[in-house]
Amino acid sequence: MIAIIKAGTPQSQIDNLVHWLEHQGIKPYLSAGDYYTVLGLVGDTSKIDMDLLASLEIVQSVKRVTEPFKRVSRDFQPKDTVIDLAGTKIGGGSFCIIAGPCSVETHEQIIGVAKAVKAAGANILRGGAFKPRTSPYDFQGLGALGIEMLLEAKKETGLPIITEAMNINQLPLFEDVDIIQIGARNMQNFDLLKEVGKLRKPVLLKRGLCGTIKEWLMSAEYIMSEGNEQVILCERGIRTYETYTRNTLDLSAIPLLKNLTHLPVVVDPSHATGQARLVKPMSLAATAAGADGIMIEVHNDPPHALCDGAQSLTPEQFADVAARVRKIREVIA
Ligand code: PEP
Ligand code: MN
Image (tube, rainbow, N blue to C red; front, side):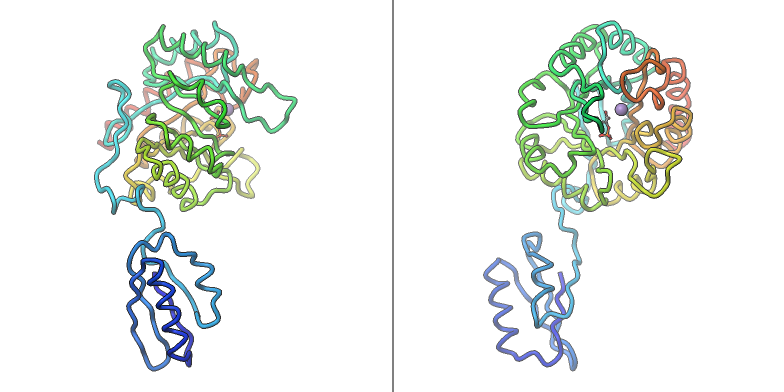
């Protein structure tokens, strides 16, 4: 971090600032020019309140040189993080396909979809038991019963399962769940992030509706700072002024993140677009851009789905997407 001190600042005031920074464990290196004095701050600057520093009367501007996130950074860990679910790997060159309904509805539905997506090449089964819905009058998910049904589907098919936790109180129900999903609306629910950080279980962290990449990585840092190193990032589109699509899929986030962090990056083209017919092209594009996996909503009967039917693929459509995605992987390998 670099702080530029205003011209004509008395030395005594610069000394005061230097002492204040040293008190916070920072080593300030002074470089006095004819017009400005530049302070180079070395040490763990993540604890420094940049806005507070910039607001000081004697400070002209402040610039971060290193990123505020540490554990998620490639500088901290150059090697890709690989999540291993009893042989099913995510990251480090292993591609994963997560598929299943938006929400678990019935025993027959989840078992049927699980078998179909497995046959088409999915490695992980998704299904919401606790659903964050825009309207309180919409289907809210089956809750604990939904998790039980997912566990039965896991038993039948051998597929590991992922499902969303919306708050801390629900976490005891997730003991046998393989990956805990933190939804877009909870990307900055810091209490929840800290709590899943205490677990030793993979967490898939979705990008918030209006989350910048830096904010998203800082949320991943919250989880990792509690000791949980198994974090997967999921790009699911961000809110823009465009209304034809549900959200705008930020494909550039994939190569950008692969550079900034060692964590696996997967893409959810279903929530990103909101339209079933856009899921295939966006799945192919995300794969070509270097994603470590994709997450697709699949329903046995999309027109009658209790949630997100318009963006859900039939098992047949999903099988086609999965086959094409594998072809793209072969080309870019
Ligand atoms: C989901 O994947 O079920 C979901 C609700 O997605 P998001 O949090 O990205 O809206
Ligand atoms: Mn959904």
